[in-house]
Image (cartoon, rainbow over all chains, first blue to last red):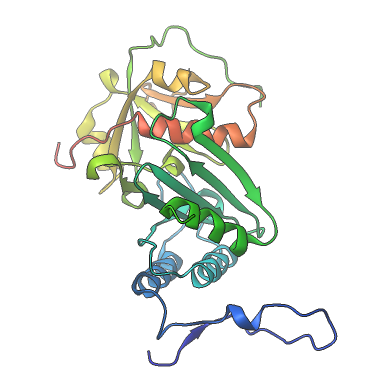
Amino acid sequence: MSSASVWDRPTPNFFGPAQSQWSKVTSLSTAAPWVLNALGRIEDLARLPHNWDGYGSPRIDPRAMAAARRFVANVAFDGLPLPHIAPVLGGSVGLHWRCGDRELEFTFHPDGTVGFLKILGADLDREENLEEGTLRRDQETVGLKFLLWMVGAR
Amino acid sequence: MPPRENDPQINDDTVLWRAVPPSHVCLGEGGVERPESWAFLSDDNEVSSWIAAETDLRELKARFPNFRIAQFTAGQARECGNVIARDPVEGDASHVVICPIPGKSSGRLRKDARRLASKAPLLPADE
């Protein structure tokens, strides 16, 4: 895979405001080592059958997989470990990063929203150690900020 | 469907088992395997579990091949904002459902699932 890139066939908008869509294309030949592995694992989720969890969950939705792939391609920096990639109920895709006592869970839903859960400390009974929310826009940008926080970048 | 009511006859120290797919097993603190929080969420907000004292572990494992079994107590599930109700299915009287207390927000659900996951160690794979 020499010159492959991860992108979603961007259509340039010559009349709209300047945007960064082109700059977000990530060359797989220069991406962090974990990225190809992660993209492959997300792709593998397509093979899961209905009821993959034994509790009746549907197959993983292609839109959720595409969103997770796009996210991974856009947050691909060297200091990140490989996330745990999991199918999630409702056809969603989960990415879970852990770095010391900080963790980040992202859940990519078929409707385009991304749920997140930040773990800020080991004692989960402390309310201030858990933060959750939903990303509806700028998901890669906000996600990248979260990930930089997780790895301790200041 | 009316909200499930907590069954007070299921004591807090009652041990429960939840079958967890291998894709929902991650490495936690100290490299110890643990369930992902997603293992404790359900589309219908009813998380299936089984009362250990009334369940044959081998039969449960046979029903969920290659799955892992997470173990926790009814009290721990309740501490995480849930009620526990019996839900006999297909003649299986040991089946219970763990349901959020009424009015729990989706954000609370996510946090409580993570909390419960951290309190539910996995039985050894070969047990």
